[in-house]
Length: 395
Ligand SMILES: NC(=O)c1ccc[n+]([C@@H]2O[C@H](COP(=O)([O-])OP(=O)(O)OC[C@H]3O[C@@H](n4cnc5c(N)ncnc54)[C@H](O)[C@@H]3O)[C@@H](O)[C@H]2O)c1
Ligand SMILES: O=C(O)[C@H]1O[C@H](OP(=O)(O)OP(=O)(O)OC[C@H]2O[C@@H](n3ccc(=O)[nH]c3=O)[C@H](O)[C@@H]2O)[C@H](O)[C@@H](O)[C@@H]1O
Image (cartoon, rainbow, N blue to C red; front, top):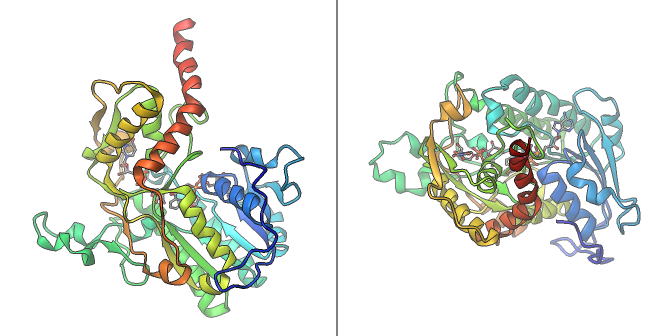
């Protein structure tokens, strides 16, 4: 997914109200991750903004940092620092117009097994970022999550209740839906709870001290460069999010593991559609500030089992390999994630606020986004997996 240097930004770009967009300096924390890498790519290819890219890793944005002859050289600088303990952070925020905070532990396998790291990362470590923005009158775009909604109201109704079909019981709305988490023993909710509290701090800084903020609640953004393939570019025992878990199984010709029957439902959105929404937020502060935005694709809903079936079909198409005889296997959540796991049952974003403020809608169907993503996974990893599988036999 290397960017094309030919797509240089047009000299004059206008915001949604017809005003000229001035070049911004953006401090992007967590720029080296999945979302950050796509956002940096977009900003370099299509705008004149400058990015101070903060992260502990830069593998996913290396193609933007090299070679030095790239057309955007000078508009992206990498700062390797851990925001937990680095005094340079405030200086970077001070010399930027806007801070975007993406840094977090955000893989469910960590929420119940490393709850302290999860809470620190999503709440404590984000606090100074909010404080520096507030004290220095700098705008903040903070990445929260759709998990702040937790479970739907409908999930507490009897299985056969007709109300379960009523959207009022499951559509997730920024300004009216409650946040419903499981008990404290269900440590899965450590992440959602930490994200909810930082949202409340940001909202309160806005109300009491005038912080100019936007909160983003992503709903399962997926695409190339998401997480890692265990044993190839991440730990062999690591458990990434579902796209990478299923990609790994397909690449290794193993059955895809369906946690607790794969009955949970998700709406998946293509990363490139979602990044369009973030760019609108960056460039339209008057329309985005003070708002919390759901960013998802309500038309792409599937159960996890349906996702597994579709990924199996798409992978077969893009790799030219027949699928294996038993494509899926059931596994309990206790076996897969350990004690304290729990799940969101259903996640459909209400789109009213983002439609009204930014006129944004997602475009890409689930089939199409899986086709481009699995083409990337196959091209990037198939050979490395073959070699990794062949190695033990050769020894
Ligand atoms: N991908 C999604 O669909 C999704 C959904 C909901 C919420 N989010 C939120 O969006 C944000 C980005 O998600 P992502 O999918 O790109 O995750 P990611 O793990 O790919 O990226 C996070 C980046 O933050 C960096 N980071 C973490 N702690 C840091 C620290 N202390 N100092 C410096 N860098 C640090 C990591 O190295 C990583 O590169 C997160 O806040 C996540 O909770 C993402
Ligand atoms: O992406 C989001 O919007 C948010 O939701 C994710 O949570 P979740 O959707 O539960 O994470 P996945 O790991 O992608 O799992 C999706 C579903 O697939 C299931 N799963 C996962 C992996 C697997 O191999 N098999 C399997 O059945 C999980 O149990 C879950 O029901 C993560 O919490 C965050 O990245 C983010 O905040």
